[in-house]
Amino acid sequence: MEASPAWDDLWQRSPITLPTARAELVAHWLEQFAPRARLQCLAVEHQGQLVAALPLIEQRLGRVFRVGGLPRNDWSPGGELLLDPATDVQQALEILVRGMRELAWPMLWLNEVELDAAHSQALLAAFDRAGMTVDVYPRFDVGWVETTGCWTDYEMSRSKNFRRRMNRLCKSSKRDGLTGPAIHDHASPEELDRLLRRAFEVEDRSWKGRNRSSVLQTPGMYDFYFRQAKILAELGHLQLSFLESPQGAAAFEYGLIAKNVYHSFKVGYDDQFAKHSPGRLLLSLILERLFQSTQWQAVDFMGPLEPSMSSFVTSSRTFGRIVVAPRSMVGRTLLRCYKTCWPTIRKLRESIRPDRILSGTARRHRANA
Image (cartoon, rainbow, N blue to C red):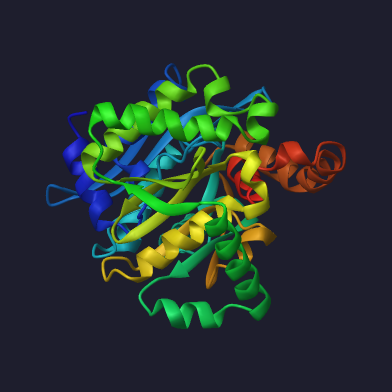
């Protein structure tokens, strides 16, 4: 943790807006999901200041090969490539890539990378200059809403059918006593435990509870999110929102806030209110509130863009996987085999178990259709 101030200073200068890429939150992710995994942090320094950094952990590919990957999974994002855009980006990345050649792993397997971001494109260019074997696989689009304009203009830019449906939902929800959003962004640790448990009790009353995949029914996950939420709250990056009803909370959203961007991280709703599409209704109310403040610039939907949420977005970004063989013949051979065989394997997996290949965030959005 000695490098935390320098790491967080680089995060602040980088274009990454997710606060889960900050040092303490990456460390917390590692403690939960990879306490014994080999960790390698590549960093480039210029004049006593970090200008590039990449955290990597050892993972298993096909339960056989060891590869280096980003510390992130379906439960939570974690580490990212951090890059100061004000530095000599080409030189910084060339140094970072040279460091990759010294790693013991035959391949680096970088999942959920924003492929069209400037820093990702710069990294791919650095791989190309170094003559490394690379494969880029786009996986999904993530929705984005610019909130710097007027709420009325935004509403009018949506389709007539969408506006009609949302108006009907608002009217019917008011008749049944649904109100919101109830926003909590300055909770004390004691209040945070109560609010977070209340939120995940809502999730437990949804399809996730029936499937035993909710946070409360997954050993250790509530403790993980409580500790994460506590860190986020202390750093000013947490917003918990609720859609209220006379019977209790109808829906919740666990939001991350940083650099004037709101990140829609986790959403859940009580099945008894399903006719009101409470997840979508709560998101609409949160969006309206964000538009009404000059503080906010955008909303990041985070997960794969589902049809039920596409009516909200004004643009999207492509995320995917970058696989690179830094140096060894073994790595290059594995990568060639991967490029040849993966399309067939993927189609087979999709045909046999289509639901299992969706990320947790994708299932979250699908549940709020």
